[in-house]
Image (cartoon, rainbow, N blue to C red):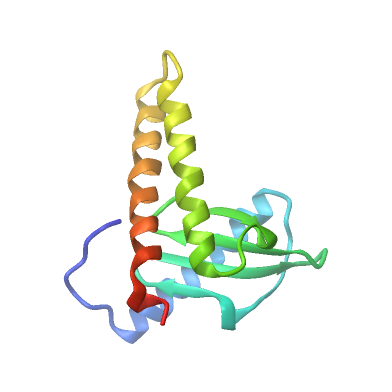
Length: 136
């Protein structure tokens, strides 16, 4: 994930959170899942890197939705019991996707770059999930 040395102001932080929330909802809508509410107490964000939202759909189903300095993605809530487990799931899933893309014959530069992005972000997500001080 991008490296930034300058701390965000509170206003920048709040704007980033709003933008990532909108991005998460847009990603769900593009995949046919309509937003109802967010479970704020179980959602986490580490601006400007990653946000993981627990979102309830209008159909009453819950999802973990990932956004930030990485591709937006989502999984059903029952795939992972908490945010930390959701990060690990996304990490493993992205590693596998990156390997599958890379193993395909004749992939173009865009697909190669996407596979590299997934692999890089998968490592970053796993490292975040392993930082004990974030989960105390």
